[in-house]
Image (cartoon, rainbow over all chains, first blue to last red; front, side):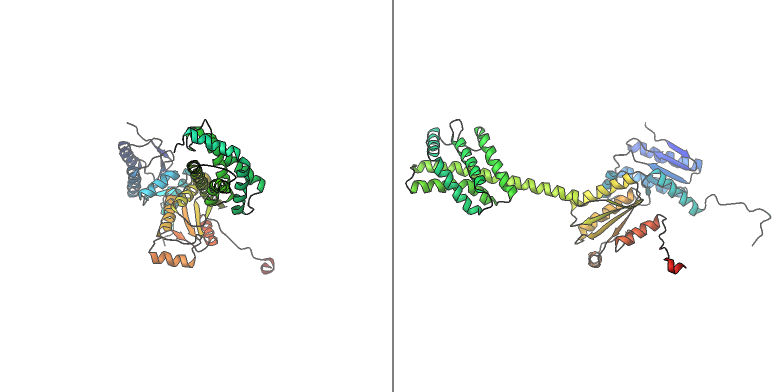
Length: 135
Length: 288
């Protein structure tokens, strides 16, 4: 069975879907990804679907679910590189992927994730030394 | 309708004998209805073409039908004439009328005693000419239809430019009524431009759209949602007061989609959102 690789780059997980997903592979990816988020403590997930020519309602729902799951695990999901034809089809199907953030390319997705990280203040937590003057 | 060979020969011989007066009178009558829109020489040439086609249909190696397999050349000549007339803006009756005039001419000749033609032969001639006239009419309509189809396509291409306003900001100024076909073209072109240029903001300007009904709104909303799916923000601008009132009266919800009354506001919004600060430089005398 085909398996979609999940790559870790810094604090971000990158999933690049290069094959047309069947339902089983999609479910497998969903599981793999949630495992990896917990394992690595990643704060962001980038899913690149620029190679996908067909996105049906099942894949659309998978993307929404992944976004929801990773949000629970405190990671932001950005779907990247949707083709115009795919976007039009999804709109015609009435799927607007609510709750899923999208970006035109991986660069922009990384920007979004960096901003989100700043807003949430991840990594600015410091242990106060004893010579700090208490307020 | 098949005309038997003997009658065709008689008719053909009749036409050959009286070729000159027929063509002359034919041209005269045709010129009257056309009132100087064609030069006389050109009209004479065209009348001769039709005359030639008629003769070919009646000729020995034809089967007396314009639609028949043997009449390819006559069909070609008639079709060319008909297409030319359709393009020049003649009415369909004028085009078919040119062919039908031959009956009037032949009737005139026999009545004035300059020629003799049995009634049955005249009726046969009439049948052949009717066929030719109908064929002319059909070609005329086809030509018109193809002209309209071409223009529709050209209009589609003309009316959907996607312009770049700033780094990462593109705009589509929509002009004219938005139907499903156009909306589809606009949507595809805009989304493709977003991919090609990597722009994060798209402005759909509807200043030139005369009316917004539920269908048009639906098309615009679909475009916005599709752009959002691809990771770009879409702003709608150019909403005139009447349109705003219609939209509210129709109960159309734009939800969290940004709408602005003019393109300048929309551009400013896009610039601010993408982190560009627009500052008016203080003029010199104020500064010092």
